[in-house]
Length: 67
Image (cartoon, rainbow, N blue to C red):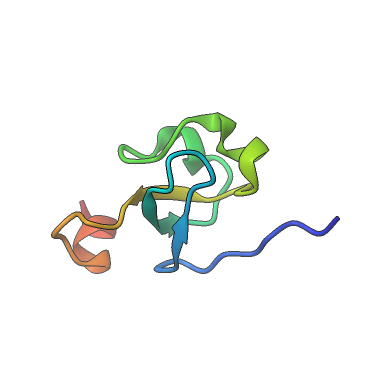
């Protein structure tokens, strides 16, 4: 089984809850350190190494990364 790959700025849908999220980091360390990341157990839900935020936040990706 291959791991999914993500690019910063991608929008993905979580398997639990169906929430749209935006990838803001592909560094596995950021999965638990990013302010808007989901819990670390995202790794077991098919999103390894991706820190995510809710896609409906009004900030642009550049603003989020700067913040």
